Length: 405
Image 1 (cartoon, helix red, strand yellow):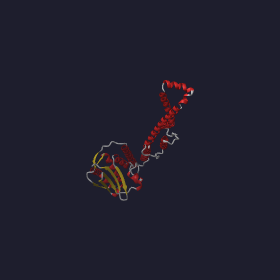
Image 2: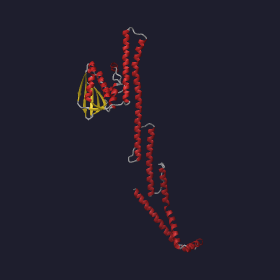
Image 3: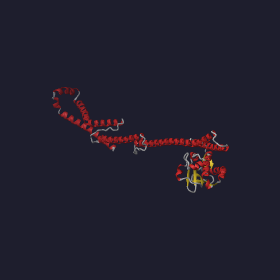
Image 4: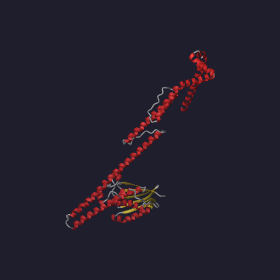
């Protein structure tokens, strides 16, 4: 289409040139025919006679023809040049960024069609820029769900897509920042509550001792023993909190190959005294040669938490089943106890900091509410994952790590 319009414009310019030549020739013929009449005019006769006598009639005719040609060519192409100037002015306005400018041409020829195409292009461009501007204003107001329409095959479409992507990333960053702030506040609240409770008890019993409000040495030792146990709980909470913070702040890891079957067997042997004290047995089902890459010292802490948790809440079931098996490209390590189930409503929050399934059980066991959160952090920071499932028959904590082949 553009090639056809360009060809048509060239053809029109050629016709205007030929028209000018034709007009010039016609005027020369007319002037030649009226030569006798023209020479009879006194004001023209004298200078014209001088020119003809001194220069010659042919040069005079040629000069007259050239003047007439330029005059007729100017008159013929004047409208065309004016239209081109209007188009040029309009393009300069568009180049300057004023996309609401319009080229006003009343002609219906090729130049009018070109001007109409340019006007249509700028209307579309201006409309799209208004959409982009509106979208940016909405995003600036905080409406990050605003999506700017993306028209494929357009560089402005690529700009719109980049803005949409930037908006999504900015929204995600703000959400993460808000979550981090909430997490910090929750952590402070949880720590304050859990530190205050044992500390209040310690201060209360020490106040009784300080004011000699005990009957005898037996009662004194009883109060001292309670204060000591509360202080131990307080120390355990502080240690767990320090460990949790250290892990989540990116502690250095000593990643090595670990034979998980040998690793778990050794862990079970080290847990035998605790198991015997609780009257429980531990059964291991394992496949051989299952290797993962992990920090052994950190894994010991994570799996000690899982075994302690199974002993603490599965004591009524008397048995802990540990399974180490291969599942495609992963190594699965599961810990199953047969005690009281975890209520379904608590399962989604079981790995949250300071979350306790039942307050009465927590008081009996002395848990800090950080053990499973620490375990989850240790597992995930090493590229693994942890999950839990529980029903009336059993509760199973399962960890998975990529298998080294």
